[in-house]
Length: 458
DNA sequence: TTTAATT
Image 1 (tube, rainbow, N blue to C red):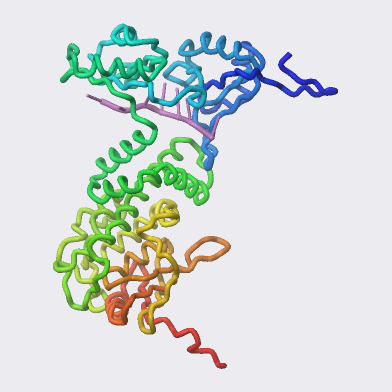
Image 2 (image 1 turned 90 degrees about the vertical axis):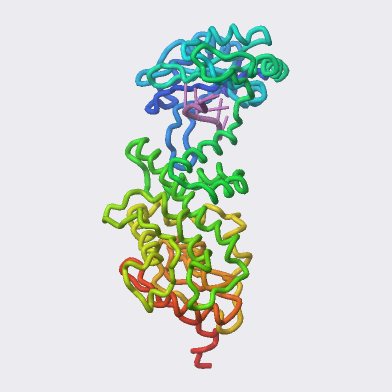
């Protein structure tokens, strides 16, 4: 049974009512072949897949397991779920139907404001009158101490709703600071968002981030996967998972920075051009795109660059060619980019590619402006993409396109690009301000783009 | 006071 034998080969078959199990708390050094013996004793395995990060290939510490027979799954679940702890893990193994098997999270409750000493059993007793409890977990720290909250999964949405109606806010547990909280648990998406906000908070980034997340929350998952991909592509594989995790977090933070950075110009500066000689006090757009959001969260600089310096203070004037002192705040800002990029090349460089659909930074097309409006820029930092290029020139007027040229084979910037404004005086202002602008060891070359046919002999 | 993880 449970196999279709053709000649020498047996093709495994599974019951039509087979259950896919989710296996959690697997040590990351165990692969399918290592796990197989553990599960085989409950029946013939139809499929066993360790979950890996799709880009980094990193073992996620969990797996999916389908037995040929439904019965085997039930046996394995009752024998193993929370029943033993695999070596190196500090929580017991999880063996339960995968999320894909049942309905989603619409029957799972978050219970907050529990007393710290309330156990799973206490929580069960509190909720059992409302229906069938499929799962009940008190959240605990690494030391095993309760975090004062729990997840309770009912067998139906209605049961969960009934529990909310009766228990939410109804009583205050001993030791809790306010009345019991009973609500549906966050969805995955909500969790991701909350984590990002937490991270943002820790980094001291607030306003534009929040806006960004509101507007582009849907991209967050894709973004993180992109980040992982970029990381893998740029840095190769990691010797240990922690390094990869740390790098992934770096990636996220970097994404936040650039995200905040590129998001801002939508607001103040669009549609205005900045006449030469005007100070940043009157033109906040000069300060904003370069300022806080991009740089307040930079990791400590190794070279003594004062990160605490208020980069975006009023009084910035973007004329380094005329006043090329190192104390120019704008220049420091770009120097900051450079240093950051040098220290975290993978984190910085490819970010602008991480938002392929980002409406605020992707010009519809490479549009060329009228004659005298198009600039050629050379000696761009390797890390600069279209978004950063646009960012750099936004203070001078309406940028209708910004294009960094990229090597087709390596996907690396060729360190030059083109920026088009919608009027010649913006272009001239940009040349005045940015030609000779020092970034790192290089100085930008900013000049009018040659007309297409200029140096063609015929 | 929102999990470690869900192809």
